[in-house]
Amino acid sequence: MADVNRGNRPLSPHLQIYRPQLTSITSILTRITGNGLIVAVLLIVWWLLAAATGPDYFAVADGVLRSWFGKLVMLGSIWALWYHTLAGLRHLWFDSGRGLDIPTAEKLGWAIIAGSVLLTLLTIILF
Image 1 (cartoon, rainbow, N blue to C red):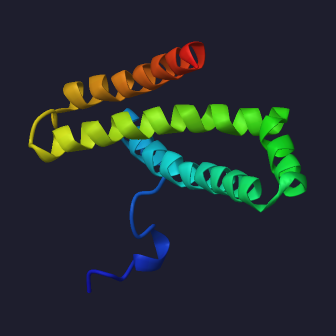
Image 2: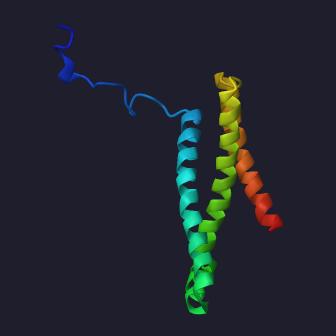
Image 3: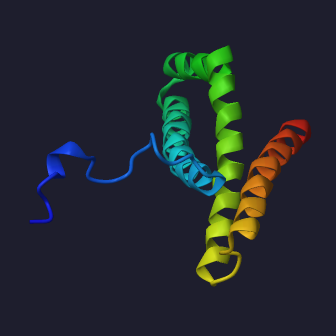
């Protein structure tokens, strides 16, 4: 009877036991940015549909996107787009069987974070 003390212990290790690793944080952030990009696409589609509908409706949609909140959402979307793209490239690299050792995976994680911030700043400066 191996499961006599089953009720007295957790079924599996949980967040209190393991320290989050950079690779797990970047993986979770990839999923979050992917979902965040869906919201940005919906806002842009709303803006385009408003432009096709009429000037009054477009004024409302354009006002939302040009507000401080809309600009903040679009700025976050630019960063999310770059982050998600670089993370996708990293996963393609992983799928080829390379870069799976811990030091390389952590370097790639930091490269994705730094690269996404740098590319976001470059995008803002250029556009």
